[in-house]
Picture (cartoon, rainbow, N blue to C red):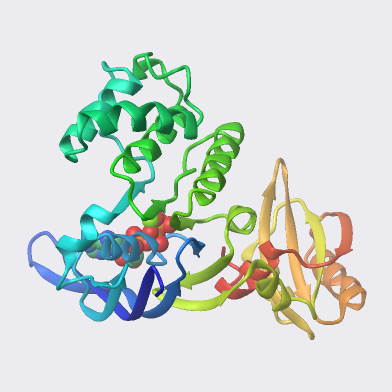
Length: 325
Ligand SMILES: Nc1ncnc2c1ncn2[C@@H]1O[C@H](COP(=O)(O)OP(=O)(O)OP(=O)(O)O)[C@@H](O)[C@H]1O
Ligand SMILES: [Mg+2]
């Protein structure tokens, strides 16, 4: 049995707009998605802002009712058997508040354990174990007002695990963390996997999904546009090479001109310190360099370093969700 089964899942929000004349606008946030997650799998839901990741997680954690479609978590129907699902899952939403900063990390966990009806004798074993698991061993007796953001986020993960759920949902767990904090949390997530937990993780970052997940669903505008292993996703761009051109200020017009060139597949812009890099995916590799550079110089732009390289997973992602990403 799969831990998570999703079929044709859909969610429409009805947002009120207008101040004087009230109107209702429908937003199709999740547009009929299908996927399944095996028991013990670490599965990534990857997509740009507004793709529908949080909405999907909220539905799967029974916090939001689907508009259409079906889903099962641990075999239980999302709508009909929500009461069976809730005690068996844990979730962490990125940037979430809700810890008691005057209490120690340990006492925060005791507070939530009582809320989840975890028996006191189980708490005595489980809380120190979880603090250790999330890398807060030895810091549990400190008030969390002195915790760094990364430590608080890891305490949130420990909180989500108090009732020993089988499935864990992590919505952008590394959001707002510095690179060191994010790396530590990624290590914690890897450690959880060795606990046989099924984990569904959302992220904006291709490299993060690549580093952690066995399979990745790329979601864009409510639809799954690709679902594969990291290696499989990379396969999508194997036939392409990437020309990187440093430019000092790129007007949208220049991007459009390059996009229109023969053999050019996808064009995106990356900001780097004072300059920008134009990333051009094309089928003809080095042959694309001259037309691209000529086009930019023809528009009077100052061009810096130029390089041709193999595509990365990030490029696969850019290709899947379009150059705007
Ligand atoms: N409560 C709401 N009312 C109306 N529209 C909403 C609501 N919540 C989300 N949306 C819309 O639904 C779409 C999907 O949003 P969602 O939060 O699921 O995306 P996301 O992939 O989690 O994005 P992000 O990466 O920014 O967190 C967006 O267009 C968003 O504006
Ligand atoms: Mg979100």
